[in-house]
Image (tube, rainbow, N blue to C red; front, side, top):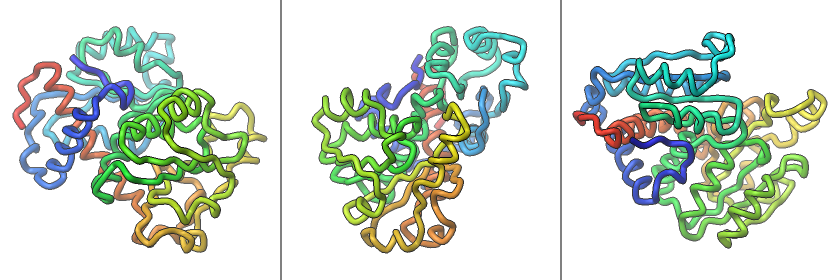
Length: 310
């Protein structure tokens, strides 16, 4: 049995196989329409989510399976004080696979240690968001045709942004990837990412404050929102939330084939006048999230030894 806590839980070969499967699902959905007949996915979401929770549910329903779970801690026994590990022991009696989102770093790992079914980390605090990373990788590979030989700009909240941390860890395994880290001083990437991931692996990167400064060199611009829920006080959030706004004028500085990605939800960091630009790929990205989660569910259930019919 396998769990997914981090993108690094998958080797590069396993990751490539999973992305190949996701592309096949995109192109031949009918082949997989009954692959998970009789299987159940539990979605255990202790904090709000739209895309991640619904894309997991859509993925399982597209595979012919069914879904159960909860969409908030206040609607689960966590409100009564039940631990994550106890909840997962119980969920293991009801479902074949589970996706868990929790505001505390490491909660998904604790859940997996007591689980009798595969557990997918659907986001744990500011730590990791591996299925968003799989979505990002599938989007980049599908639209660019490669995962190496790219310059990617990561913009916004690089300190608390779990999507950014996961994506950096995943992309450093491919050749000729350069990172441009675009953030104010207060939201710079954590030191452990800078020292233990980028510098330790001799990955080229630069840190800049102005988005305009980075735009001309980028193959991909990955925008993130400033997350109110990660700040300790309202004043710091208000001061930071409008630091970067991508608009049509700034897009004029970019390459003709640059892609704009965003894990969503956006607040105001991408102006709506960018939505019609053919380089804006963030809504395609959301669709790729369904395909990659379908592929992940199938892959983890196969590792568990179940007879998946795809």
